[in-house]
Length: 141
Image (tube, rainbow, N blue to C red):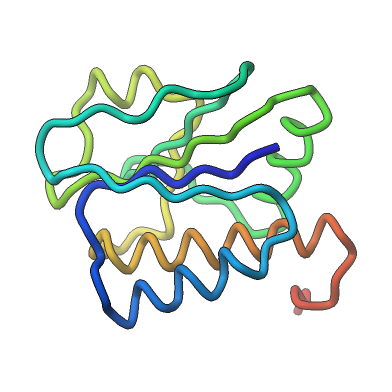
């Protein structure tokens, strides 16, 4: 299953971009990163179906790393070809966009800058795939 991050805004050369790149390179699954302008522009079409769309949104559900890994595992095992993770611009998503998502997830109750959210998502994707592979990166407390 491809893990596809679709994010508003260009990261350029930054500490956050280095983190995203570091984690995406470590993931053994197929990954892709698509950047959209802050306003306008459409997400690239999905290559394969079925697809699941996940929006990072402050109104989303908070889940632990193991629960997140199990969600990806279930989708993968059900034949989902691509999980598309959407990160909005500074103003987030509208109600119509949220309604079209398969999942809304949040990284806690705090509001995070969208560039940091991208790095956090890349790390959580690496952690989730590590959990599913039985790799010791994730340690439960």
